[in-house]
Length: 72
Image (cartoon, rainbow, N blue to C red; front, side, top):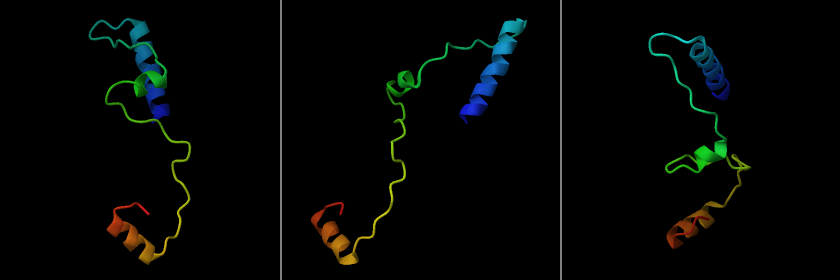
């Protein structure tokens, strides 16, 4: 998706510089990802370990944790 967005920005930038007569695109300045992550309602950045290795937990232990309102 990042590559597609970059390619689209390149095309729109060329159209902007070419000076289209009707409805030329106006691109915003490029900003760092931190700017967007700090905006209200923004998604969170990726974690260092997005997919941690799974672990096996005994069924009885899970039931006991569920009854106690714990995660594990």
